Length: 441
Image (cartoon, rainbow, N blue to C red; front, side):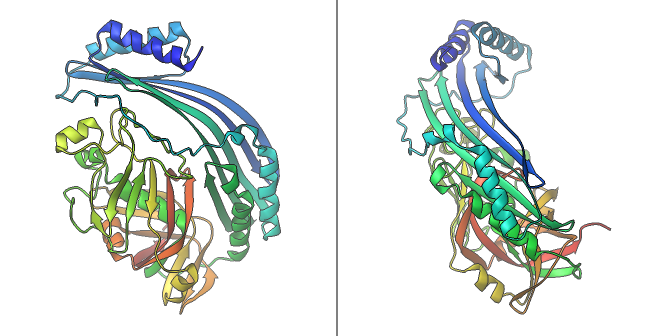
C-alpha cells in the first residue's frame, strides 16, 4: 500500500468516528546497521520500518497512539479502539484546536539518495583501521544509516511529506582496561561523513590516556570536550520546554528575558539545518519549523511550544510541537574565539574531559547534577596536559555553571549518540569552577 492510502485510512476513520481534531503522521524508514567489536565486523542488517502515529480529540478528551502494522484492517481497527479508549478516559482542561492550515513549507534539501547504497561493512573497516593506526589495540562501535519519509495529515488542512537521510557513527577504542577513547561523526550526507576521523580520534585518545591516575578532590577549571558539552547543554535546551517548565522539570522557569548564562553563550534550536539529523520542515501539528534562539548572549529569549502550551502561556507557536509536549529539533551553540590549545594554555589547574555518561539530577528545578567522565580525560597543570585521570565525578548546578562559562572553542562538531538524543553542533566549553570528587566511595 502507498503512504497516501495508509494516511487516508486513518484520517477517514477519524472523521467517521466524529473526532473534533486529529493529526496523523506516518514514518517510513529503510535503516542500515553495522556493529563491530574486537577489531572485526560482527553484524550488518537492514530494517524496513513503518510507524503510524494518531492523535485525536473529542470534547475535553484527547489521546494518541502508535501502530507498526499498517494494513487497512489493522489501521481502521487501531483508530477505532483508540477513539473508544479516549471516550472512556477522564476529561481534562480545555486545549485549543490544532493550528489551521494549509501552510507553506520550505524544505532545505538536506537529503542524500546515496544513503541507500552506502557500504556499511567497508566504512566499518575504515573506522577500525584508522583507530588501530592511531594507536588503539581494540576497537568497537556501531554505524547506522537511514533513508526515511515523514508524512502528515491533520483535520485542520495540513498535508505534507518529505524525505530525509542520516549517517551516524560511534566508535570506541581501547589500549588497556582503563584507557579508552571515543569518536563520533554525524551527517546527513556522505560527503561530510568522515568515519576515519572518528576512528582516528578514538584511537589517539585511547593511546594518550594510558595509566590514568586519581586526582585530589576539589574545585577545578573543567574543559568540556564537544561530546560532554553536548550532553550537558542538552539539559539546558530541555529546560526551555514550556511543558518541562509546567511540570517542575526546568531550572529556567520564570527566567524569560533574564540573564541566565554567560554573555558569550548563545543556544539555538533549528527546525532545519545542514547535517541536523532531526531536521523537519513541519512539526507534529503541521506548523512550519524555524530557527528559535533559545538563549542569546546569555539572555533567555523563549520557551518552545506546541499549541497547548502556547495557549496556556499566551505565547506564539514556535514550530516545536510534539503531539503531547514540545520537543527540540537540532541544537546549536555558537562558536567562540578560542582554540582548544589556547583553552588548555590558559588553564592553571584543571581537567579536560572528552566523554561522559550517567548524568543524574538531584534537583531539576535547581539544575543540581552529577556526571561520570568516560574515556579519555587529563589533568591540566600550568597550561599543559599532564597525567591521564580516571575514576572521577563532576557535579554542581548547571544554572551557575553556564553563567560562569569563560572560554568557548572556535571549532565545532556535530554530536549525537545514546547520551545525546538531540543532534547538537557545539564547541568545547570551559567552566572555571566545577566540583570534582571520586566516582565512588
